[in-house]
Length: 220
Length: 203
Image (cartoon, rainbow over the protein chains, first blue to last red):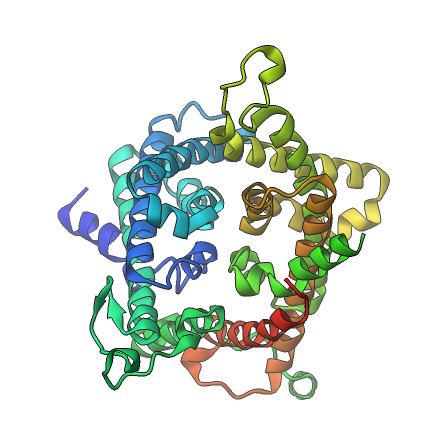
């Protein structure tokens, strides 16, 4: 594998082929944990570790997996890795683990992990599989951290727990936007992020999903 | 009985799976292009959630909960860390079983939502339902009400989103917003609307 190929496997999923904003993979957990940068960071790190390890394991046993039961095998491998991560978090970062509640366990059913193992790791040798997984994990992390930073900055005036904007309560001039900490804002921000990326990278735009009935009639 | 009904309403509207907990968003977004497929997905969700949550509750209580093996002389045994693998196995088996039963006895229904059944194994909302059941210590009846309610809430939300997306045929959207971008914005507005339900059921 040449150096440029390695680089592009790693860099492509960051923006150009971003798993979250382009392929709609893994958003299930992406939005729930982004109320602060710290939870977003822990979640991203957990997912990246799981996806890289899963890619390595599945790629190593790829010639021995019977085709009919490959999904079950992949899910069991991923679930075991997630249990390990979950137990580590509960032991070393109990506060954050409580905030993330069920969402770490839900990495098991994260479409991103299963999507990469199913479409790439299963068919490729370990090294490229791990690079691809790492790239996708980082692409996912990038989206999470951007959204987490925006929500924490405008919702609480802080970043990673440090007060950046002094709020009115503390004698400053910034009124926290409570909406930023609620569910709808995560949808709006991700929608806006998708729009921004697609304005910069126009080849990602989709065609209209439906055409009005009268236009279809005219076309015929 | 009243409590169960209020739990059902709470799971369906106040704690709507896709709109307040962001669970099952992948299928929520990907399969809501047309309201017909959204209805199929919604029905499948109600059935699978309604069956798997009580079933996982039984398995958790009898086999995995701390102290569940006290009768065998192992009161200190705590297998709850295995719940994730057990739940996903149960869900995968249930989905497979449901598909076989439907195919054998109700071919018409199977044809209607057969394509959605296999992907439900890896649906976050279904695994999430079972995990929430453990976290909140529901009993068997409560798990059933919670499972059915969560499924109904998902069905309502996905059918509404599908219908709205069909109406978008008449909207002249900026190019970058087409497809995914506008769908997220719509889901955000629906989440705003659903947050009004928070006042509906007394805690």
